[in-house]
Structures are given as structure tokens and as C-alpha cells.
Length: 105
Image 1: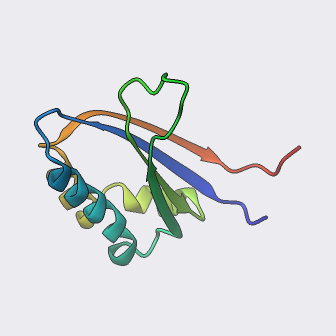
Image 2 (image 1 turned 45 degrees about the vertical axis):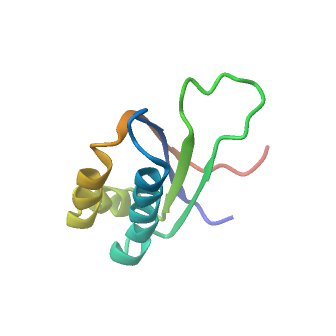
């Protein structure tokens, strides 16, 4: 397995944001892979857990990098900053976790 750095982002959205607003945020986030070369891979999905402990977070995004330098270039990138401006009016909460993917033990 190639060593990769996972950047996990969870969002909850404001009650005032419409489904179209949220879809616009998702599309803008997904498009970052086309704008930022350092992104190795991207995927996302919505919560389907039956445990009811998601604490309001509905959307999960996984951005994969090959190095810390790639992640560090992504964070201040102008396209990432522009995405933040698209997101901000709709964002209720965000949670971010970065980790190096490990092989199963």
C-alpha cells in the first residue's frame, strides 16, 4: 500500500441552507481536485449511520495527499480559499481529522 495522508472533513449545514445550496457546496469541494494538483484523490458521501451519534454532521469528505507538503500546499491554495467563501454562508459545524493511512494489522 502506498503511504497516503487522509484529510477527513465533516460538515453540518445551517437549517436555512437549501438542498441546492448544499449541492453547490459539494460540487465546489469536489471540483478542487481539478484545480489543485496536490490532491491525489477525493471522495465524499452523506451519513447513512443507524447509530444516531453523528452529532448533526451529514456530509463526509476524504481528500488524499501523498505528502504533508502536498497537504500544506492545499490549505492556503487560492482555490481552497475560494471554496471556503462558497461554504461559509451554509456551514454550521466542521470537524477535520488528518491521518496517515495504515495497513491492517
